[in-house]
Image 1 (cartoon, rainbow, N blue to C red):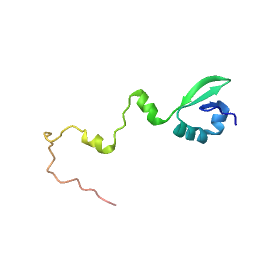
Image 2: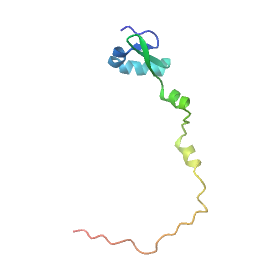
Image 3: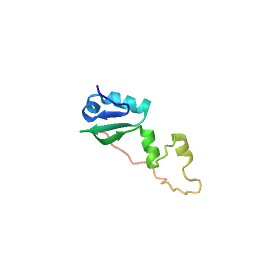
Image 4: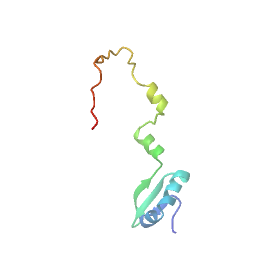
Length: 87
């Protein structure tokens, strides 16, 4: 395989995709070339989200950031639930 550090020919990137992903996770972004021209970069999802400005929040923090609903008045019907007939 003729892979320069961080650079993959397109055909080799396709044939060795799992290795490419492993390299992304251990060595950082990897460049893909086609006919000697750089055409794409493969990078870790965390780096990508940071680059586009999307911040990941854990589920507990997400729930804690919900608006205060204590003042919300919810009215509920006092009628019994409908009867369902099983045949």
